[in-house]
Image (cartoon, rainbow, N blue to C red; front, side, top):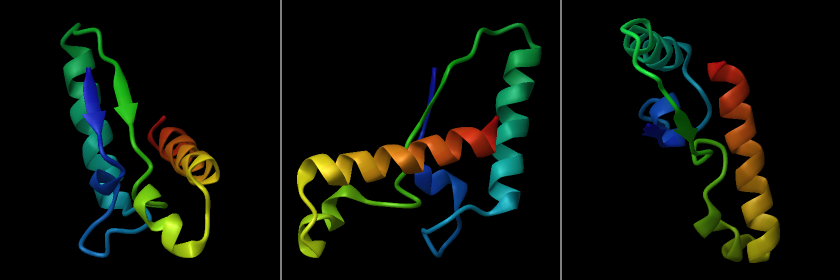
Length: 80
């Protein structure tokens, strides 16, 4: 199992996705998979939304968690 923070998808800006980072991560995961190792990837979405910022914006915990999950889905679609 590999747990990737959403921040692994970006660069110094700490927001969004950088194609170089995405390609590097995908190549590393595929190289392990090609060795015959069963792999599972768990992704975060912090490169799009950090839950700790929600309260400062007047966003409740549940809504903030939902926004964070959307970032996770975005990363999963990009990595696939």
